[in-house]
Length: 235
Image 1 (spheres, rainbow, N blue to C red):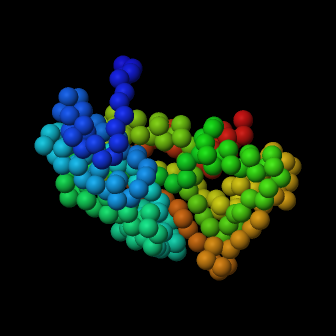
Image 2: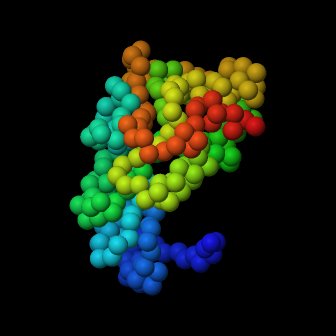
Image 3: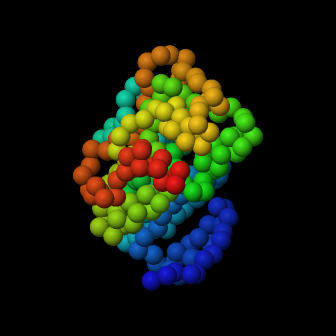
């Protein structure tokens, strides 16, 4: 069924949030807010407190950045988050707070860099190519990537199957930040002269800003490789 009813509210409009939740009594709430970290944290605290009184499930979209304090390996759902960035620390704080309030009715969806047609990342690459502007990439940083359409399909499956816990979404294979951009730029320009290579942490060792999954809940038909993601963007 297509849902057409929409409404807007500021993150400080807690009374309006309470009113809307009481009126709708949702089975599912998906949170993917952006903005000031302090305001987001307080909003999520108010949201969780309101949902805690009913049976609603909360799906919270988190990030690879909760592991940016350890880039020595890809991280699975079983790993404890460790962050050094303000963004990563904020996301950890939000995850932990929501767990305390929501318990098993919280589902955490950690996602990597999202690409799509269009998307800010892809649009920026194409704009740089158009303006003959260099693109900075890391040659030793292995990254996860995910398409927006793939995220939608995977999240729909998680919802429909009532899967619980923590999920790490992303491509099923590995590719460095530099390699991913090479494939994009070479396909369009025939070369990679616009790419300016750097070493992450100024060290030659391989580093990982990458999510891996130890779960078996998602079928193979909903998963994708980096090559499949690239082919979709370039078609």
